[in-house]
Length: 121
Image (spheres, one colour):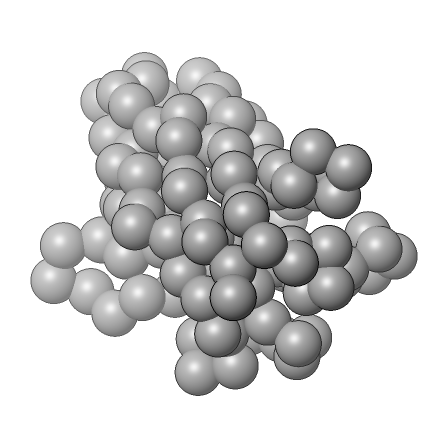
C-alpha cells in the first residue's frame, strides 16, 4: 500500500510558478506516478506521468513546455513544477501511483487528497 500527501499549492499570479510535492510512504519506487487535476464543475484530467525510474514521462498537451514532472525515489518524493501559470490551471491537483503507464485515472491505485492551486489574473 502507498500513502500519498500533496503539498505546495496556493495562490499565485498568472505567469508565476509553483512546485507541488507528493510525499509517499510505502513502496513508492515500484510505481509510476501521475499528476491529475480537477477544476470546479469539470472532470478530473490527466496532467503528466513519470515512470518508476524516471526513464519516460508523458505530459498533457496543455502543459507541455510549462510543467515538469520529476521524482526522487530515495526520498519517496514526487514533484510537479509549474511555470507560466494561467487562470485555467486553477484546480485541485492530485498525485497518484500506478503499475500502468498512462493517462487514464482508472489505472491508478492510490491517490493523495489533493492540493489547491489558485491563479489570479
